[in-house]
Image 1: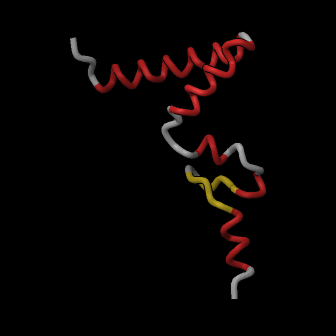
Image 2: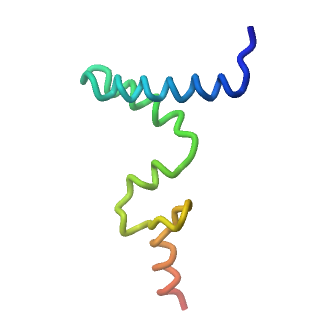
Length: 76
């Protein structure tokens, strides 16, 4: 039986929740679960949020690079 796009999306969300629970439950599960979570990230926002907050800021629903704004201040 084929899986609809909506069912696939919910299955993917459930898989991510399960992987997060495994990563937080036991040290032996942490590395493999986190590897899979990072491999299937979907977008760059979580990765950018790992950087120091002085390098980015939230502007509505978007993340804006503070580093690029600072670099433009110093260009001639």
